[in-house]
Length: 262
Image (cartoon, rainbow, N blue to C red; front, side, top):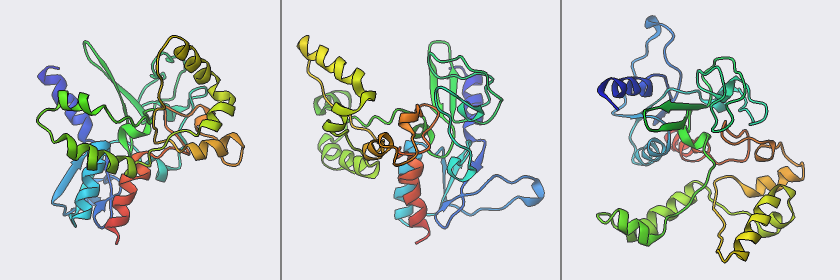
């Protein structure tokens, strides 16, 4: 990335709206200079993704007042629903005229500050979430803890025992990480591809494991029974989930706000 691209990306990252609360400040950007509000916050966090959300919570717990800048919508407060993959609406993409999900650039859109954005560089494209919760809104929710041996090899300067005894378990708890029930996986027709793929992998001598996720699988079981509104089973993934997913806006950030109001 050259200097001009870096500056452009930086400007994009810090534009947008902020939050007001006792400790975690939430709200919308001033509409005119006459209504500019002076906010007194010793800590400013740019972006409400994983790094920003964790920092905000720990700072709020320490009694610090935090101003968080986020360029995207507060989707929960906006009342605008997320789009599913098969019938995307303008909420699907950030200021794009077509959908930008990998391999699914098929649908025309009305230009809007939607949930999924993509930055294109010379050798790489980067997809990201726009809105309160950052990338947690649009990712698949997989919450994999790396093998400790790999971690030690890549980060020899870090205290691996501290990460595996404290930080990783804490993150899993805060994000409400869970795994699918084996009986549900066996019975649910939506997981037939998983079952067949696993059988073939075992025949070929490969081992398989279940990937933990922040999507609430108990909610998914209720979706399948039509007891609650469908989200994952309504093809809601990369454009955001209206229900079921424990993204940062429902975990770290919500906890920060509650703590700030205590």
